[in-house]
Image (cartoon, rainbow, N blue to C red):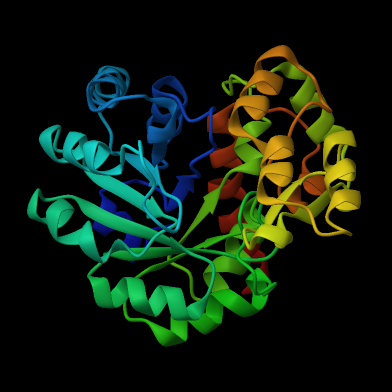
Length: 319
């Protein structure tokens, strides 16, 4: 189970929790880190530098282990964003690991590494992974077409994308998209990844704060339960195929405006759904792997299954 990633990030198992917008709280991140993985708090939960610093401190109270802060950005800087405030918060609090996503990391990497922080950059394509390596990041998290949230615009599957990136860069690669258990973990390692990142599987856990309606939905879903939308605004996103997403699919058959698309997938609508249990009221990021989730477990049970059964599978393979 050891890998270069474990040594780089000072973690027991090379299993990382994804950013999970609205769900990646200090309590949840601590649960993952306490189980031996790398828990993540999502900076988008917070409205200011001080709020994020408070969340970092709270996470430290809940776990003695390494955890990560995710800072996701739009491709270009927009008025009112808190990216630099959040970068400063991580530096001042001496966070161990930061995952960046959504924008070229070259301006942020020197500042973060100057504070002794390990930097991961989320990339959906080989060319972006190479660019991130050139910027000086320590590792790249690579998400294939199967992933929930934003898989990029190239539609390249995890099975093809991971080894392609592994061959193209000289830093650790973290595989995402289609990972949920020991078999998919081992598949990713065989493709050359030093670890995995999971979001959809962690939603269906007892510690996740999402409304129970969604956990039940994920358990009952199959591999056909998701859809890619937002291609019309060049920001492809995989979501659970609910009534809201069906409406967007029909809308995008025409030529919708940016505002018409965003009205259906806004973060505010998503957050409200997560809290009130409305399964059809917004966009619910969800990977194709939802079809392989059959139960709601604790975070520790999810991680332990990967650890124990991957070792068993390996023993069986070399008999």
